[in-house]
Image 1 (cartoon, rainbow, N blue to C red):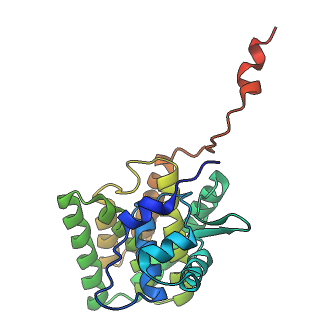
Image 2 (image 1 turned 120 degrees about the vertical axis):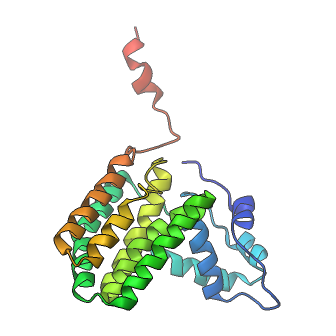
Length: 244
C-alpha cells in the first residue's frame, strides 16, 4: 500500500523553531502529536528517523525515543524492516474504538457530574469558548484538535487517571479514523453538541448528559465512510464476469 513521504509534510506541519535550545523528547513528541491530531500529517505517512533528525536538529537516538512514545500511544506503527508510520486504523479497529467510547465515556460524564464544582464549570466554559473562537476563525486544525480535547477534558475533570489515559488514546485514534475514512462533517461536529452536553453537566442532569454524549458519538460514527481502502486493484474480480 502506498504511503506518503515525511520529507515535505512534517517540515511544513510542525514548528521546528528551538528558540536557542535543543528540543527535548517531550517537545518533539508534542509537536508531532499535535500535527497528527490536527490532520496536518495524515495516516500512513512514513516518519523516517534520518529526516526527522534533520528537521528537528537532534540525533537519531532522540527521534527513536519520540517514535517509541508515539507508538506506545498507538499514534504511530513501528513496522520491522520498514520503519515508523502514522497509524492507519482498520475498519474493524474503528468500530472497536467507538464501541469502547460508548461504554467508557458515559461513566466519565456521570463521575464528572458527581464531582462538579465551580472551577470545573469554568474550565468547561473556557473550552467551549475556544471552540467557538476556532469556528469563527474557520481554523480547521484547531477545530479538529479542540473537538478531540473536549472529550479528554471531561475525563480529566472526572478525576480518574486511568480513565483519562484510556479516553485520551481513544480520542486520538478517533482523529486518525476521521482523517482516514473521509468524514468532512465529523471532525467539527454540530456546533451545539458539546455545549448541550456541558449544559446538562452543569445542570447535574447525568442521564441527559449521557444520552447527549451517546448521540454525539453516534453522529460521528454515522458520518464515517467505513470501508477498507487499498491501492491494490483486483482486476480479476473486476473483469472476471466479462471473460469469454
